[in-house]
Length: 333
Image (tube, rainbow, N blue to C red; front, side, top):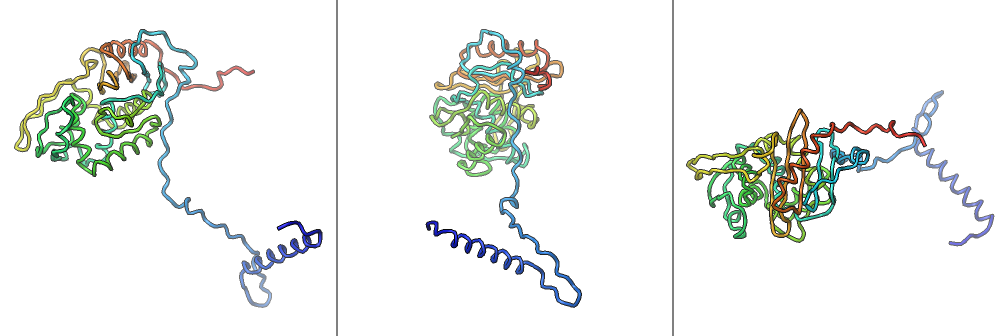
């Protein structure tokens, strides 16, 4: 509608005032009686339905690069294509290379698998029946050696995942509590909830898939979450070996860890290895010394992976523990 002139404008203003007055009268309480004054009109503010909805817990703070920005990093002879060194206690990054590159994570995927399974299980003693589909995997997969119909505990499967990276153990957990598709969705939900933004999971094992990707940064967040929130998983991930005696429901298993770092590095506490053709050699290593906790993630590595991890952990422990960044130390400009 076009502008019709001053008279029309004045009429519009008067009509608006009349509407407001009428609304105020309607909102005013209808009080009757001699000498009783009506209460002043009040505004009615509608409630946003979203304010009544449950509030999701806040996403954990991202890893900090303040210490790294202030101190820089040495030129270490690291051969892995991507990696990161993190002080778990302060969440400070102490070394990084191409840490946000989205790469095939191989069996490091199983860290997220384990967290989701732990969230769903009633306890680590919960018994699970091994389904046929969990044992019919690619011929070159790593296997715990499960047989269809065996009844094992969640704890048994966790040992199978972390010590020998059993794909059959991971797939059993992915089918134990909810439909497999739902489990994979929960893996991606878990990743977002703990602050992993470079990652997407399409299976529970880490077998190569063009859509399965994660970054060293994200996998460091996953490892830090396990170390600080899942002590039962950490206790399993740091074991050098485990014997699961035969029971009436399953055969016996003798498991020895694939994580060479656990046997060779003083203070090593875990955590996970991986390898596929697309991913190369991958490792998440955790270690404790003098009350400090460090973790290292390496992707796209070679057979020198343990040497890379050792150099980075040695460097991290040789430096004073990063202190929280103090903005007051920035000089005035």
